[in-house]
Length: 120
Length: 154
Image 1: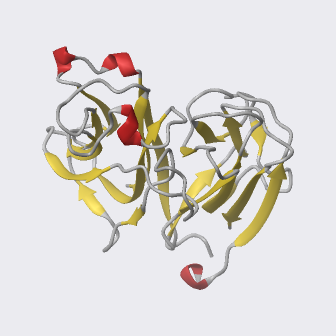
Image 2: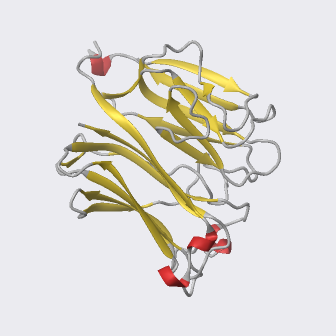
């Protein structure tokens, strides 16, 4: 049953957050759940930033700290970069304190960051 | 219904070296080892993704003295005794399928077949980077590093 059941999915879009703050991915997600995958579009901030980092954490209050998953991007020519992390079908990452992220740059309303969480 | 699922742990290994870290004294090559599970402990590497990162708006890594002829970023998976089990190159590849100047993007996701690679005596990730021009090793002109996301189970 488990391997043929389906994931739930929820998408959040962010156009307003500050660098180094911990931001909850979605208030509609439970604090404890099985993380099955992520699809992320890292938005381009205002101005040129050579190296964008988006780091996911289990729990809040760890802004500008290490996390469990880190995605990187750049911003020449294209405003965003889209990436995915998919957990093998028979596996999960246990999140117990809510899924949060922090970025090394402020967000931009013109190129928002979008995060889709696949979970059970 | 989730009880038959296997729990995996997500670990990120990230390092961005300054350009000045690459010197003639280290042959313009640097590395760092990160222990994922200690020696004597069993784990199974289920999946990983690795990419190199360049903190520059240059049009190409080659222009930064990061040329594959002399340079590159590699990720070695080692057991608890320090023996290398396998190595992959960490390339800067496209995240969108459109021109992105070969910089900073996510690498290829490797879901390892047959449920993963068994490390029965610990596991460490050794990331290494070397820089240089097409003809000779040399220091880069921008910070250069590696980003690795991996999933392992017990």
